[in-house]
Amino acid sequence: MSDLHRFPWRRAASFAAVLALSACSSQQGCRTSWPFGKDATLVVTVEKAARRNLIELVVATGKIQPVTQVKISPEVSGEIIELPVKEGQIVHQGDVLVKIRPDFYDAAVRQAEASFQTSRSGKDQSIANAAKAEAEFKRAAELFARKLVSESEYDSARTGFDAAKAMVDSSGHQVEQAAAFLKKAQEDLLKTTIRAPMDGTVSKLISEKGERVVGTGMMAGTEIMTVAELGVMEARVEVGEVDVVLIAPGQKTRLEVDSFKDRKFAGTVTQVARSAKTTSAGQQSEATKFEVRIRIEDKEPFLPGMSVTAEVETQYRTNVITVPIQSVTTRLPKTNDLSGAVAAAEKKSGPEAKGELELIMPKRKAPKAPEVVFGYSGGKVQLLPVKRGISDDTYYEILSGLMEGQEIVTGSFKAISRELEEGKPVKLEDPTTKKGNRPSAAP
Image (cartoon, rainbow, N blue to C red; front, side):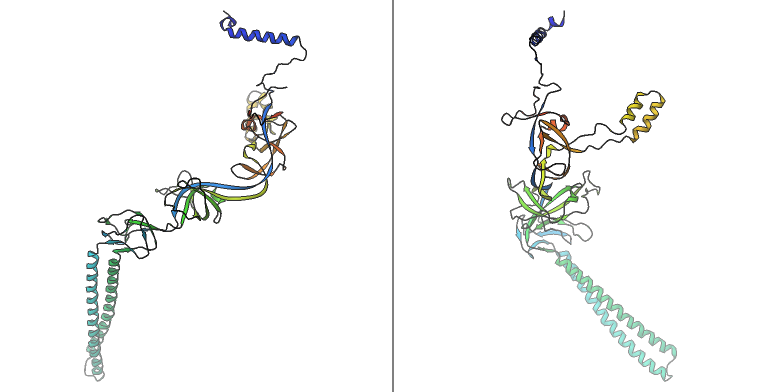
């Protein structure tokens, strides 16, 4: 059974084709056009290159943090016996934040005071001994001068006096050492009461009353709370290594905080990190990021840890020629200098052809694709190499290759990126129908 009998719709199509051919054979000038043939005309949109002001932005995300915040950790260890503040409470400089049980440190002070007094008594005794040794030495010297005592007795008296003076110096050092121990013990006792180092808000409270904490004398210590100045906040965002070189202190920034919808806040870059952020293990993260700090100029009830998106204005251009971003594409050259040599070598066969190709191919570098736009004139497009500058979210700055008012193709994306070629005829999209990039039948 033939295909025409198995598939009836094929018979109908064949019959329609015969009728069409018969009709054309009886009329001169009849031509058949298929809407999606290779000669179909592309429908495009165009726009004139115009002058605009451009602001190039670097977008980064991060968190809001206070500019000034202090982590409160004890310098001495012990049990918390008083914790008179709560999280969110406003405190003033000098207010009591924490009290640690002082019994051990009070006893240490009393012991140090006793040692200090003992050392002072020892010094007084050594001074008295030195005075006695000095009197004996003077008497021995007088008697020795009159030949009433032997030289050995005179030397013994002198040695006793020298030793007594050395004991005075030693006892003096012991007093100084005891005084230092006493001072340290008194300071440790004072450190059992922790006071607010500044005016601020208790933004984080970690420890509880009755908890034992470790001092910072030999290790990191226990973090009890954080006091922050919430009136002055900053955004700490992470910027990639490609964009961080464009950012510098003083640049203006627009900030979007997730907690304040449909609002933007002003900010200024104050600090750019000079080294990449690292993980806790000390190794750089897979995506290299640098921290940028942005002072928030607006006063709102921001809280530490709120998510923020920053748009940093890195470059600004005034009254420059611009085109839509989607209009700029790249086109590779169709040929290069070694194409003929490669084609000739490929026609040969055997070891000779293989040797020529091995010599040619390493020299055959891939050509760099230049950036171009497609100009529109008289129903055709023209390939125009351009050099672009900065960009915003919508437009590129064109440094060379275009004139103001020159019409260029802006759509569709498929046509610009793949289908358009030098001199190819196109058709402008009807603004009333907005059919998009649909090929139309050739006239």
